[in-house]
Amino acid sequence: MKPCSESRVFLGMAAILASPAIRQVFSMIERVAQTNATVLIQGESGSGKELIARAVHHYSLRCSKPWVDVSCAALPEHLVESELFGYERGAFSGAESPKPGLFELANSGTLFLDEVGELEPRMQVKLLRVLDGTPYYRLGGVRKVSVDVRIVAATNQDLEGMVEQGRFRGDLYHRLGQICVRVPPLRERTEDILPLAEYFLRQYRPNGSFSSDAGELLCRHAWPGNIRELRNVVTKAAVLAMEDRILCSDLGSELTLRRQGFRQPISIGHSEGANLDGMERVTIMKVLAQTNGHQQRAAELLGISRRTLSRKLKIYELQPPADRSYAS
Image (cartoon, rainbow, N blue to C red; front, side, top):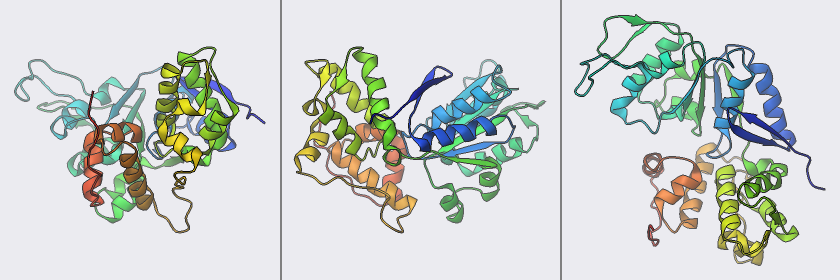
């Protein structure tokens, strides 16, 4: 029986809710959002962490106030401080006029710090002080700035493990994680797969549908790249398929090879005693294999930056497969 699903929109981003697991997450968010507690959203890349963050703001008492989001991994290290806290004219070469930081822009509203695990230690200290209510200076400033901002952070990393390794401040971890929300990966909420796939299909083919075999194939895939990978597969099928009815053969070689039995599906995270680092290591190598070693495409499927992928390859001492593809 086809799962019953509902659609909601949070700050312009659609949410498709079908599985009990994701409905439970949103039920929790509706309660948590009414407080001013900081929220730490944890989950694999592409699992929908930004959507959860937007839902926190949507349901909060600050919903009519500013929403500001930033990816900590996307900011070069030398620009993180000036972007978050602003700068005054002449603070550095090229600073011809003062600029408010993201904290000021989010004043009275919500600031979403995506990939917060990427912050370097010095910025972790300053962020902790601001979260504790301490006024701060803009870069090159002489006047302290006070803000009232609700922080929502997200990460695909094991911050608790990073604390034990000395790579992330324990006091900041506990300050960010007043409320911790785990977003289950797509393989743990298979009831969401087909409703999500149908939603993505309608964006390009309003009259499109999946054959029963194609729908079954989608639901049996492990989706290491989670929703982002599912969207990419469905989008490609919608654009390239000859007919409105999407067949197994339209879904790409990786999925169809699984159906034909040439490869066994890889189940990640179900083996007893597997930890998050081990799961991440296997996922990274699997996606790199799928992309023939093309690191940029692998990063897109994983929902992380190329810089983050390179860093993880060094951390796990992984040797990626040779890149046998050619960028178009």
